[in-house]
Amino acid sequence: AQPTAADLPGGSGGIATAARPDGFRYHVVKNMWVEDLSGTYLYVKRDKASKTSKALPVPEDQALLAACIVEGRLEDLARGARVTVKFDPKGAVRPVITIVKAPQIEVIDAKVMLIGGPKLYIFMPDGSKRGFEIEGTYRDWDDVVVNGVAEDLVPGARVEVRYDESGREPLRVKLINPIDRSTGAGDAAGGDKGCGCATHGGGGRLPTGGAMVVVLLVAAVWSRRRLTN
Image (cartoon, rainbow, N blue to C red; front, side):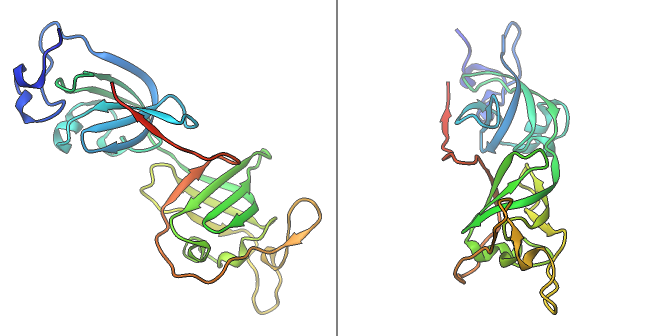
């Protein structure tokens, strides 16, 4: 039987804090996406589109957690990273974490597909679709667009989207051809949706809020169940 935190050296300091004893065998998950790090659990999943995640016990103490990382840095252990983890499913022995790939900041040259409320959908350069959602309302896109306002995000408008998959940097959208409000010229004056029709974004003026971004799956409702052993 595997030991518990109570009977391992150094195991009284909390979940996953004990040193590895002789003969102990870890469970291993390889090349997993980090979804979240919260308290004493690191939540990982096989791929970004997965609706379920696996909870791995980790030390809550940040200094001890940093010492568990054998390749990479503690700041790399964030949403969007890929990791290989040796862990104790009973939560006694401290894990061994390898950062396979650190989270990336994406800069995407795209066209607006549709905006509605807090959700913005874009056409990627390869023609695929991708969505982003801010925490707030349609009006809060004013805080995201660095050289315009929400009304400028009309279908067909060219934009540069800067997205930090770790969530540490806020979402930023830059208009490639911003409207000249003195003349009305520019993409935002009337975007081409791709079907020959020009439309404009809309939404009532509502109180502003935060601007934390979450990547959406287009035409799907994303839900999550956290699984523990």
